[in-house]
Length: 237
Image (tube, rainbow, N blue to C red; front, side, top):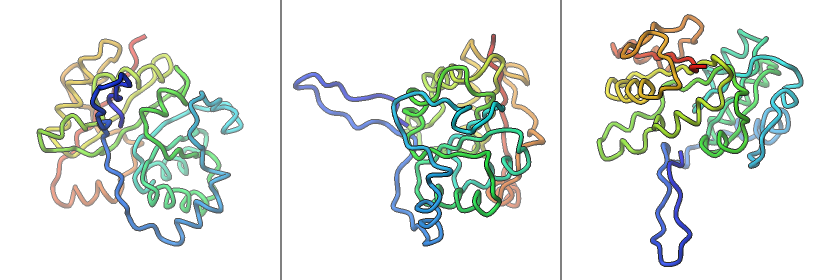
């Protein structure tokens, strides 16, 4: 995620933007490549620095739910299949994950899911209108456990402000992680935003939402006796 940009002043050193992800050249399967090639026109949205009309994109008025960092798409595909009265927008920067998500959406003939393969900060800042989303979901983001990498963590104060702007009146922000240090960071960062209300009470984690699918990633963590911390917030006003 871009957390700051370089100055364009002459003579000013150029800094690389700090991001919450590293683009690795992961192996993409032929099926994933075909899914992107053959079905991007149906499920993909190209990044443009102009606000989308989400009702036009999905062809109907319905609750709009955004998931940031969908990974292989397992979570958002399960929700889209289970709750077909909602519309789901996925943000993912890794091409193999994008291909797998589209492949699964095609296999289940889902019409209520779209994906953007681009940096989330830029998408939220320029492509998603204010007060257009009912929910934003960020589940198991990269914990960046080393202290020198904490600046790469996705949930920074400025980014939380950006998320809040995109949520409707009393919209919801849901978070989850299996890293205790990251959980504390997210709790402190979100609790410090006066525009958000911690639904479990300030300083508290939330019960696991019943609607959140149990993914292979989380199940593997449970088998390793990893605890999961959930957080839930509402826009204040």
